[in-house]
Structure formats: structure tokens, C-alpha cells
Length: 324
Length: 261
Image (cartoon, rainbow over all chains, first blue to last red; front, top):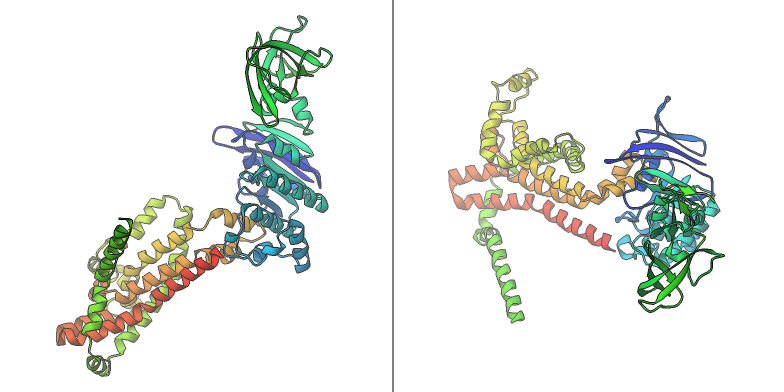
């Protein structure tokens, strides 16, 4: 169990978060760049001093700012950190990188096979590709027998299929070892692909902690909705609601046509239509806002169109979720 | 056209190269075998060589022990007011060696408090082996410290951080990551410092006229018996001063190539 309760100063705000990650659990810290996600990982790793903190890992207290004050140095924390730069030691071969902090030969060989890098053991890091370097860095971390894994956007800059493959590899290996793992991501898809639980962080504040689908389907606040991809907020149709309440619209939760039984129906004139992946991104100008949805079929511009926003979350004037 | 400019470039570079090497070429063309033999077989001819090598080795040891931590602290920016510390290093680089020699007399000479303190222990820092080492340190230290600083600065601190997270305490991180990665640069810095120490003359002639090292041997031979008899000692000086830098250069180039795989 990794227990974290910290407050750490950043230049323009304070990062405050309390998290508990169970053995074998994968938590994703999701939020925009500069939200304080990396800072949080660095505090857990002991690289950044917190203002106030209590961090414990499998019963060992790593940091405590209250008496008795404890600050276990990074080299005794047994916390593994993987960053975007794999950080292989350039003067050591792949094999020597892998066994930098020990591990038996048998263990090294079986892990290298699992990672698909058994053919690279004799190579120098300068000779391996970006994806391979990440596999080596992951292997080095796992061979170090760390008690927790911190992944700081490790696969940014790699192409999507490679990212997915590496993410699945981490999931398998983390599950096998029953270690708590935290992934920092600013792409929602990466966070969802990895995590059992998702924490949304913005400006140093933990806005929501929930399952990867819940955070998108039921954002706790308008800000969370914005962060997970809601692009428009329209006043609620019914007169019984207070006038300031709005419904959030996520482009992926919009279907063409009028289906009042499935959600909120809006109509307007098509302002733009362009391909988006295998779908069509259609912008509809309604009386209150420009609403974008991703539909199966293209729609000619200037045509009248009815769309249904499936089960939209509602927010009150303060941006808090209105539970229905 | 492209070919012509390419050849012009090579020719131009070649000319500059020849000019830079000119003194060495002149030395080799003006030496006669008999003069080498007669100079080097004269009684006491090898003494300056021994003095130079010994003082040079002591100088290097002092630089490594005291200069390396300073260079690392400068590179990591862990010292308060880093510019102030850098000025200290630059001062001995920018002061002319003759001036350093003069000022050293005022610093460690027999009538200064340091000189008198040393005198209590029967140690004298003028015209002694110690004086020679002090002069050589002042002439070579900035080359080592600045070179070592650049070598340490080229090591990515995130690699050291990674090594720490993998369980290495700072001393082990230094031994297993920092030092090996900085080694090619450190070797070059040390080699340059060695060449500087071997050739130190300006400060040496003032504070350590005795015992003679090779540069003073060349100077006095030139004064007493003229140019031709000084040349063989110049060759000896080159033969002693240059192999270490050349070896360091070859070694660090190979280390870098090995790293590229």
C-alpha cells in the first residue's frame, strides 16, 4: 500500500493531494501540463522536499514532516521512477543497465524475454531505438525490486501503437509483482488505458478520484468536464431548473437525430463538418452555443440538424455537478 | 564550383595547421643528433627532468584531490554565489604568470605571516621544491578546474538521480555514473594541466629559481651557452609534456566511440 498525503509549494500554487494506492493497483494522475503531477511523483520519490507530508509505502514511513520527522533519502526508498527520457546509462551496455541494481542472471533473462529485448543485451544504449530504450528502462526498474512504480508520462513522443504495447506490458508486469503503480498522463486515453483508478489534478488540487469511465461520464465539476474533453455547456431546456444550470456536451457522447428517451435533444444549423479519425466532426450552431459531436455520417454545411446529447452531466452556477 | 571551394577549404585548413605546428617542425629540423647526445650526457643533465616530473606529479595529485570537488560543485551550481567562486578560478587563469610569481612572493615569502608560520616547521616556500609545486599549481589549476567543471556539467543530473533511485548512495553514484561519464573530459583536463605544469615558467622563474626544472634549464642554458645547446632540452620537455595529453586524447576519443556503440 502506498499512502500519500502531501502539500508542496510550487511557484504559483500549492499542490495538495491525498491518495492511497493498493498493492497491484494502477492509479493514473491525469491533468493538464503544469498541474503539479510530476511534482507529486518527485515528492514521493524523495527528490523534492514537501511543505507538509506523510508518505508511507508497505508500512514503511518514507516522509513525515510531523514529529518524528522522517525523510528517507531516495536511495533507500525503493521507489522506482520512469520518466519520458528513459535515462539509460550511456556508458553501460543494455545488460549492465538492466542489472545495475542487482537481480540474478535467470531473472534478467526471463524479464528480457518478456520485454522482447533479449537480442539487445550486448548493445550500447546509443544503438537502441526509443521504444527499446523504454523497455530496457522498465526492465531495469523491475529488476531493482522497487516497492512502488512511478511512471511520469514515460511514453510521450512514441507512436500510438508502441505506447499501447508498452502500457500493456507495464500492466502485466505490475500485476505479476503486485506493486502499487502511479502513472502521470496528460492524455486521457493513456490514463484510461493504464489505470484502475483515475485522479484528476488541476492547479495542484485533486478534483476527482474515480474509475476511468466514471470520471468521463460523471465529472464532479465543470472544470473536470473541461479537462476530460467536454467542449460545450448549454443551458438546460426544462424551466424547472435554475436558469444558470448547464449540461455538459462531450463530442463522443453525441448521436445524430432526435432521441428524447436517451438524453437532451438539440437542433441547429450545421456550421462545419470535417473528418476526425473514422468519424465526422460536425459542429452545430444551436441558439445557445456551438456544439460539436462526432457522428458516423457527414452532414452538409448549412443543413438543419437535430442531435441527441446522451445522458449529459449537469452543473450548477458554481460549476458543481447536479446529481439527478 | 563545389569541389573547388571544398579543396580551398582543405588547403586553407592545412596552412593553418602547418603554421600552428611550425615551432615543432622547426625544433625537429634544427636538432642534430650529436648535440642531443652531448647535451644529455653532460653531468647532471637529467636532474631537471627528474625535478620537473616529480613536481608535476605532486601538482597533479593536489589538483585532483582539491580541484575535482571544486569543479563538481561549480558544475552542479550547489555553491552559494557561484560567480564569486568562478572569479577565484579565473583569477589565476587571467593573471600573467610573471605577476602570479611576484604576488606569490608577497603571499608565501619568508617575511609574510604564512612564510613565517611555515618557517616554524622549517618549511620554506621560496626557491625550494615546495615553491616549484606552488608555482606549478597556480599556473595549471584553472586549466584543470575549468576543464573538469565542463566535464561534470556534461553529465545529465537526471542520470545521477536515476542511479540514486535505483539504490545507490551518493558516493556510489559518483563512482558508477558521474565519474565514468565525466572521465573522458577529466582526462583531457588533467592532460592539459600536466602540459601547463611541465612548461610552467613565468611564476617559477620568480619564486622557484631553484631547483631547476626543465623550463629553467632551457632558460639558463640559453643564457649561458646559446640557442643550439638549449634545443635538446626543449625536445626533452616536449617528450615529457606531450605523451600524457596525446594518450588522454586518444583514450577519451575511444571512450566516446565505445559509448556510441
